[in-house]
Image (tube, rainbow, N blue to C red; front, side):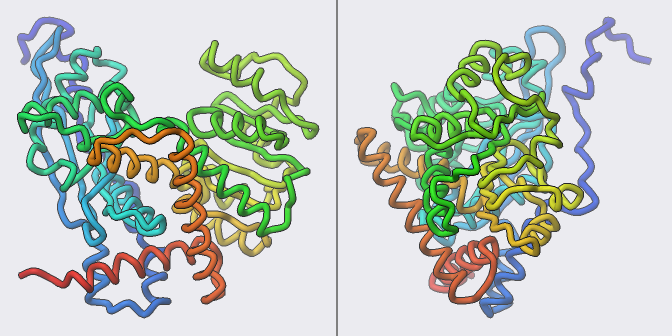
Length: 437
């Protein structure tokens, strides 16, 4: 029987969490199934492709933290490095109580393929700390982050593995990682992370880069599918960092945003929403709930079924699934979030003649911005907004053209074309490098 004071171990599951059970269908296996098909279509040597199917390295570390009130806590930390054929690893660091190792494997591999599609010289990685940041104060979070970074010293770095911000991480947290590594190196190592404050070498335009990349892809898709200026309206699921920023950008350019939603529901007006009013309300209240205006208030399920030229889901994974795919009333779908269309729904939409621009291409603006920040840090430069915008447009346009060429050559849907382009580039890099043994 425990003799501890009442309340000391009330948060035992938070401090010493059990490893979450994996879903019946492994996220990594689900993600890789498309790339297996891509490799088969390309005729990639099975022995060569076998290397691509497994992460190069998986690292697990214990992260002990002194809590301000209560016992010492030991959190789990991970870093999965998928493939370095094209260059150093890069990928997200997340702070979440729900981290699963297999999801990190999937995310790391996804970054490998995304970098390949964008022709960025990186391989994919992913990691973080299994910690409930809502139950820990800021000082405790800082202790965890700094210990995690110190444990990975020698594994991460500008030439090895660059950390980018993800769930639970902001610019200050990325600054803590940079400072920790810099203290161990005995010099300022700003290029070890991206998403830093601009005062510490962060790049301008990093916060809305995903939205700006989506804007480029949207323009190219409207031209290709002959939708003009989307007179039927654009519906955006999600009003946060990606969806909200995209809605603001498109509205300022004269495009009609017919729908916008958040976790509490959707707002729809076929004639167009007052986007600045909606975003201002959300900025002040943290949600769109109770926002006044001229629009229909809809449930999130109803919202996705509204007629539009373009539907852009920017919120959650599997928002479009086998049960609602046939009820969509859009002429084009562009993935703004990571995996918003399930594999089964993707096939259903293809059968219905609704083109889907996949996330691996559409929402890659953030990865391009990470690359830009890394380059600027290594060169000691700070590019002006016009240069950043021009170069982002170039990378997104070249990626679109590359995927379109593969699609035309093989007669496949765009998602498969993007996967094939990624596999071809990474497989070629691995083959040229050979195997060191």
